[in-house]
Length: 315
Length: 278
Image 1: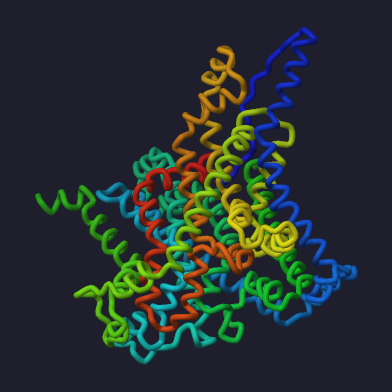
Image 2 (image 1 turned 90 degrees about the horizontal axis):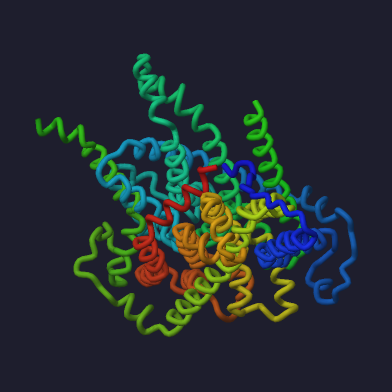
């Protein structure tokens, strides 16, 4: 998806000493372009990661936060977390939420991309309209789904009733058995159009001559899909899945607004868990440790992806 | 004959597409429809699918005559515009440097940016809270603008990079020969060339910041709160007055819909260029 880094370059050959200095000066001054960005990134990303690491190695709670003498406790926070049923529960919820969401987002997104891949009137407009779901502020989307899933006056229950499934009516977000499903449905609604847009762009990049040649050789639609579309789309599909996994794993506000992590922790995914540890219980040390573990997990995933792409490019 | 052209022109696909899109966007319709109902009508069983006659009570009490909502709306505009400007100021020269100038360590910077995409906001929010607390940036516009840019900047670089890579080298070289400084090349040649990319980044930065919630929730707990936080607070306060909540939601979504409607060509084009090409 974001392939190798290659830059066009022009080599300026100079012989005089003055010329060489001028070139060196210009090379240095070139860094001025990226300097502001670098300073900003160090201050707001690298430094917070460092602070997180540091906090995760100290016994940092309300008391020691005020006094500023939190003792260094090595990996105790991490050990505590790994043995903490709350953390394990949150990690499990995150995995469930992410894999199911991602599966549906991808399937729906891919189906839509295939549907839109043929030209027809209003094609572009409809694609754009669908993307509106993705652009809605998550808080708005969450509030909206909360209203639709309302047990007494929600429109979901009304639809169930009107198609004769009234017995399945439920207080969707208040019932621990259905709350996670409710948040997943909302999240799929938000994310599927984004998958569609990226996958559609991938489909458009497949040369049509490939399909024409296959048709001449007598390949049917299913054959063409399996033999051409899937292999050609492999890199794009992997990229979209990776990006989708990361974005879904990070989802916080949608769940926060819909259920606040409840009922009884049914929707407490890792980001919600970290938020609670840090900003509700002020267990900064453990909050930071779970943040680092979350980051490491996603990093491993990204490295695995990079390896995979690299191996394929080399082959 | 008529049937034939219907199929050949793909009108059957248009029909399926329109029906699907209408169903898919039903939640958005339901938000707007609910906002035009009276307090009594939201408890109707079966619910009224079309709010006729429309009631404007929710808008009148919660929006027009609610100074608090106007306040948070203005806050959101200031924060989103600020983040948009900061993102452009950092990302445009930065991406130009990464894409066009032979910088040692440029690959590392790009890698860092990609990794920063992995960071959930909540991971950065904790340390930023500690730091901002120390330097007095909590509950301020600046603090939130600085925080929100962590989300938009990596995105901006990823989207802008392919645009800058596509600037013809000849154009740049010609400008250099004419005595343009490197900055002059960026300003006079590259920026005009990548204008669609810049519009994409500006629009997306604004849209992403407008919907931002985590930083606002953790850093601006008292002052200068954006509309997303206000909406979340309303949920607690209003409980079941869904017409009021949906009116506020609609107002919160309105700028998104307007910006998207006017710039959708750039937004979709930019997203797909950045993501797929190269």
